[in-house]
Length: 125
Image 1 (spheres, rainbow, N blue to C red):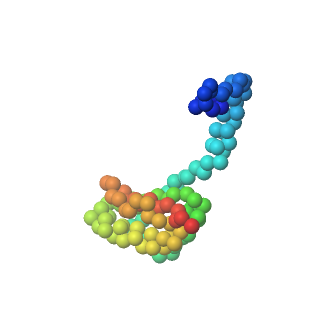
Image 2 (cartoon, rainbow, N blue to C red; image 1 turned 45 degrees about the vertical axis):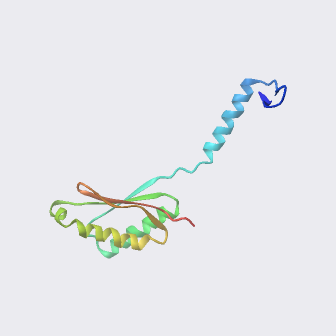
Image 3 (tube, rainbow, N blue to C red; image 1 turned 120 degrees about the horizontal axis):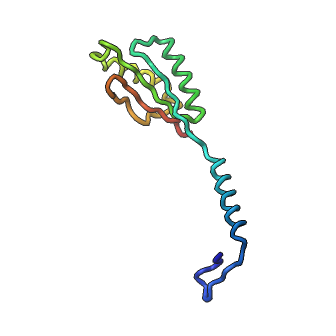
């Protein structure tokens, strides 16, 4: 292994290559162990959800966000609800107002076919 390759002549160290590889793998394993894996939790809402149910879902979402997880909020539109998708967007905005002190909107509400979803991330402390 080269200690100082820019010196004249270069300074090298004779070592056990197998032991060196083992040390490198051990360091990589330790670094991987200390990583935080961010999970994506999903909370489903309904376009016709009532205040009590919305508050319960908001409390659950706050738990997820304070634990450091991202949360995907989704609404599935059924039948004639497709004609009034703006009401579902209002539900999303009301829901975000309930959880905005612990989370930030990573992606605003998007419409994909019959689904409307948004992504929330934990707020930086």
